[in-house]
Amino acid sequence: MKALCWLLFLVISSHSINNAFVSASIRRQLGQTNEPQSLTDIFNIEVNVDVHLHFPNLRLKKAYFALQEWKKVIHSDPHNMIKNWDGIDVCSYNGVVCAKSPDDPSISTVAGIDLNRGDIEGQLPPQLGLLTDLSMFHINTNKFSGNIPNTFSNLAILNEFDISNNQFAGTFPNVVLYMPKLKYLDIRFNNFQGLLPPQLFDKDLDAIFLNNNRFSSNIPENLGNSNASVIVFANNELKGCIPKSIGQMANLDEVIFANNQLSGCLPKELGLLHNIKVLDLSNNDFVGCIPHELGNLKGVEKIDISHNQLIGSVVDVICTLPKLVSFRFKDNYFNGLEKKCEKLVKPGLALDHRLNCLPHKPDQKHEVQCLPVVNRHIDCESVGCYKPEGKPDQESKRKKPPNDNDRGARGSIWIGFRT
Ligand SMILES: *[C@@H]1O[C@H](CO)[C@@H](O)[C@H](O)[C@H]1NC(C)=O
Image (tube, rainbow, N blue to C red):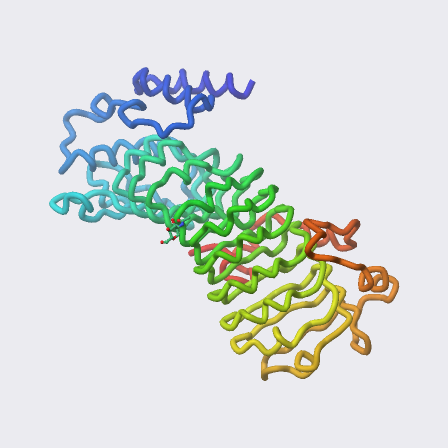
């Protein structure tokens, strides 16, 4: 029924668009091809743009057509972001940035779209794939919905793709895997769900923001292939272990796993992340002891392992790390605190001991809760992605959907969204 409505919609709305476009669209929407579409295949610009309009160059003419098509599928523009999107001078449109074309400096073309914080409701039409000189596409904090057209794979020099804080849904937008020059991928705060594709980590990206969606797969085993410096998985429903390949990620500066359903032991390979500054593993179902290898992270500034089911002692090798300014471990099952952790290592590095099983400390878990867990024998070499049954606070840590009130009010700048 849904597919049929789509077809009717396409047929009815296609008066001004030629047949090649319609059939290609239908094929694409029916998922009969995953190949990047050829633009000449999806429409013929000459029949769509008034012959009496004269443009400085063909690319600006294409841009005019693409932006006018976009305007047609924008239903609400409360801040008048696109109010001046009329006439042939697309470079004067609000949110459109022109620059010299990289392959022909004698002409100016559209190099960027920046419609952040527009609260705009609408979709992204396939014609946006005509903006082949785009190097950045920023539409964060709007109400765009639907999917990302496959024609975006024609954006051959797109470097930054930021669609965060919108209402895009469906599975992971695979089209981003076909953007050849993409470095910065930001799809956080949408309604994407399902699997994370392994190809994501074989792509030469520098920053990957996936947080606050509903991804529910394992983290692919090839994670370690990525050269990214920042990866944020937080606030999804990801399961399974942290892949051991993470140890290969020499460029990794920050990685945030917070608030998922990850399980098993913390891999000792985390100790190989020599460039890591922020390591956030909080609010998952990790078990076992703190791996001593974390003591190799000489540059780490922030470690958060709170709200897991870790046992054993909070170890000196972490508490004495030279750059550490924040170490959170509350709400686990630790029953020991090594000597240097006991005394504050540095002024200002206040340790929050609460909700563990530490003898002689206030605000600990009840003995009845502690006993069965602190004595649990966990052999990390064989435990696999062991997940303890019936974690008591499973419900309370469920992610809330983003709403206006908590936007930007999060602890980490990465878990908030970009401005
Ligand atoms: C990471 O960088 C290395 C060295 O530059 C390169 O050979 C490799 O292909 C890159 N990996 C990815 C996934 O981009």
